[in-house]
Amino acid sequence: QVQLVESGGGLVQAGGSLRLSCAASVRAFSTYTMGWFRQRPGKEREFVATMAWTNGETYYADSAKGRFTVSRHNANNMLYLQMNTLKPEDTAVYYCAASRATGQLTIRSDYPYWGQGTQVTVSS
Image 1: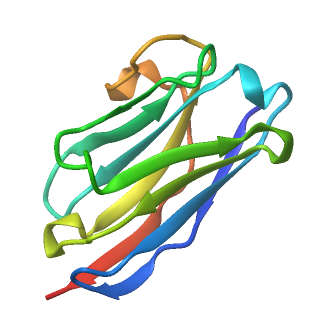
Image 2: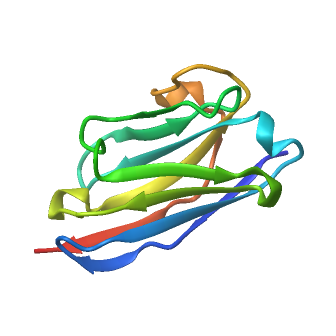
Image 3: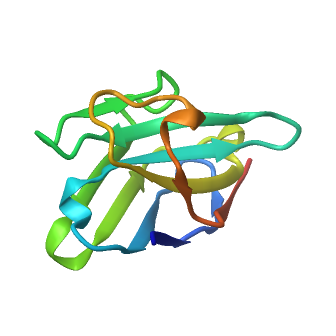
């Protein structure tokens, strides 16, 4: 059983920063590839970032490159997403996801486990 709980969302002005956290209740967290997705208003859920469990390799959506950083603390079963230079178009519900698969997992169906999401609102 895998449970994921996101936190850290909120309201921030454009140009500001937020750090999202995802607490995982799972055995052997270090053996899960973890990802962040988001769903903007009226849009489909989209990939943001992922970190493979095998080698810690990260991969980002173009919209996140250079502004967002994904990291994890395996001893504490935590995943993070540091978001800098936020833009109004980053407004979305952000979800963390987990998978036992390896590689650059960028599509929803790659991940069988999901959190409930945390709202991020960026004002202009």
